[in-house]
Length: 535
Image (cartoon, rainbow, N blue to C red; front, side, top):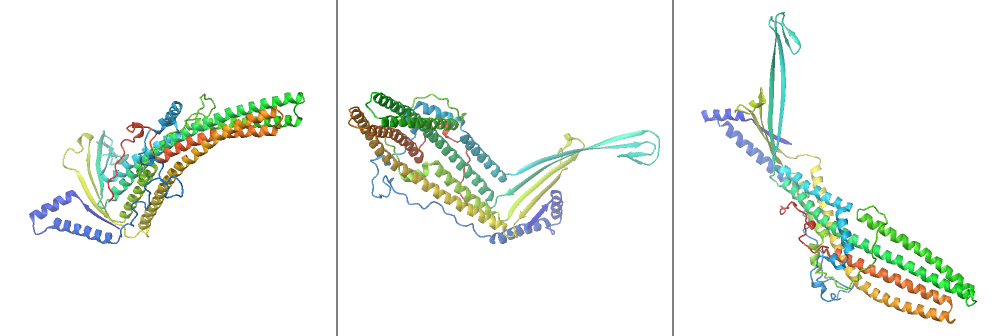
């Protein structure tokens, strides 16, 4: 239903003059009061038909412990030393003391396509705030036109107007040209009496802030992924070097057995076994080389470069000796950018649901225009003889077959889904911290044990070789000792890498910034819109 009240300015001036000269005829005053009462009455009736928006939860109902649980399933387990009471520190990238890694991280921040896409999405969200807020302001449109009419006449009484002859005559011809210039300025504005336009702008502002947090999370994830890919590459290079070393060792053993066989000191079986082991190691070397090249290409692609295999570097894994301050569990909700992004996304959906609810309320808009028509452009708007109009418009939905109600409920359900996503993101964040902290202890225990295993395996191989040379042990014992040694060495390298990977995971899970310079402009998103408190 639309109720439109049109008031023309010139007509109102005439009526005001009449009522001034004849007080017994208060037409304009009576008409204005009637209009006001009609608008207020209709608004109250229509607004009373719309119920309040469905109440949505304000915050997640998750019971958070006072300290991180180091041992899974053991609620009475104390925190590891006093590290959990310390605030999470920024600058974790510096703790690896790896200049090469720092260089590659900066490359990725400058050229990674996923990060560039995230930055573009953030810029789009910021522009959307301006678009959503434009409805709060009046809009103006200027239009103009120019027309030209030619009139040709014959002095003897015959005239031609627009190509049509009028009258008769054969004397002289006269032509006149008339130019008309029209211009008008129109202004429209909708009064935000219920705050729905403000709600939509607020929704866009929260969404922009959410995208800003997602951009920060993308930066942290990128740095973490570059660090992980780098140390995976280093690990595969160490494994490739170990595969070369292992092949050389088996070749030396096979050559020794061949010499002893030629002298009649060893059997042909030992020769076959040793040569078999050499070929097995050749195959293992080819697999290690492929794993190394594959990780190198993945690393190059992460930097935004062509995935070739040209990279020279010293393969060395850092030793993790320091303990990471983990802070308190409650602090995670305000520190992790992905959790903050989910919180802001939910606020955006709540604001959108409120705006959808207010779409069912009456709306009041105003439009006006001023126009003029002259013979030339420089004469436009040069006096008060202008055509003016002003329109009040009250519109309220009466019957839309339930469309407005369904749109409101759709927005509410979207908000509920966003809240469920917030709960999931929060629980996942807690789980990641608990898992990485627990795994740190487990990996340290495993690494300590495997280092001892390497030491014992080396001693066992040395003894097996001596006893084999003395004829006390057979070649099978030597072969088994070699396998145990190199398997232990391979596992030790993998565990060192696992410790580094998990350390990166701890920093990422805790939400600490990789850069210690907290005022670094590269970590800030400037000119973000503000989101006022909810109505």
